Structures are given as C-alpha cells and as structure tokens.
Length: 204
Image (spheres, rainbow, N blue to C red):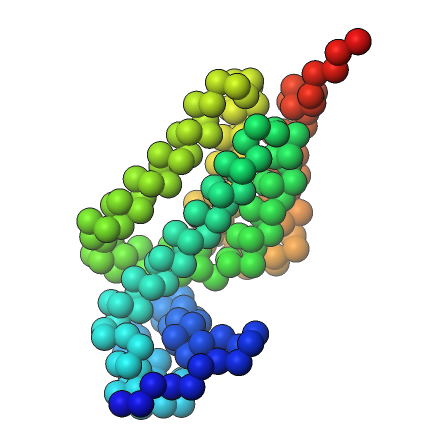
C-alpha cells in the first residue's frame, strides 16, 4: 500500500484525524459499540486503509489514552520550569485550566471508556504513570518553597482535576466558559491567601 501524502503545514495528519473521529465515536457510543468499519466510513476510506495507520481498535484506544499522558507531561514541564518562582503559579494554573478546557472531550472519553482502558492497561503505561507521579512528588517535596504554598498548589491542582475528571460526566452540559470561570474562581480562592508568601523577599 503506498504511503499517503504528507500533510501540508498546519494540516492534521491522517493518523490524527482518525484519532479525532474515534474520540468522538468512542465518547458518544462507547468503545465496545464502535467498529473499525464505522471509523473508516467516517473518514471516507476503506477499512484496509485504516490498517495502514492502526493495526487494531485497541491501538487507536491506546493512542487516545496517550494523548492525555502528553497533556500531563506538558503541564508538569511548565510547573517544573517555574518551580523556583511560586509567584508564577497562578498564571501557570490558568494555563492548565485553558489546556484542559481545550481538551475536555478527551477527559469525557476516559471517563466513559474506563473499563476498556483498564483492560488495555499494560506495563508501559505503569511506567508512564510512575514517571508523572515522581515528577509531581518532586514539586511537592521541594523544601525551598514554603510548605503552605506547596499545600495550596496541591489543592489547586486537585480542584482543577476534580472539575474535569471527578466531575467530568456530571458537568458535561456546563459550557466551557462557565466551567472555566468557576474553576478559576476556586483556584483563586486557594492561591490568593498565600500570595504574600510567593513574593520575593525585599532587603532594606
């Protein structure tokens, strides 16, 4: 089978477009109810052409799961880069909210297909989870940052995760703008009392 033409600049690859279609179908109908033929038909090509990019439906499921891991890594990269500057944390947390709002469908996909993802869980995923957990622990145990700030950061991240993961299904009908506003207010309440601690100490 010939290799498909490379996408032009700014255009998504065929592989990414397949994942976008699968994300929509898995989120609405459920992983078990969707066939590879349905995904191929939505892409307007044959099932055989789909196999050029993914060898099975489980491979598509795994690729969608790894999209969430990529989001997590990007968020930790931002936090670690500015860990020594807690005054930057409110802006970073706002960026986390924006990123999660832009990928809200991905969180709903994980919630609605939890059983299929649990079945797919493998050793390589365990390693990914362990890596993210270790990086998170490094942020929370950095003793150069006041413990109150670290606790508030942990709670703020928990509030954001709760809005998208724990409350993802319950809040699915809440518009993005409204959910973002409420989450930012909650994060602001958690971080504002510690703002003075985050300011660099001035010498007279």
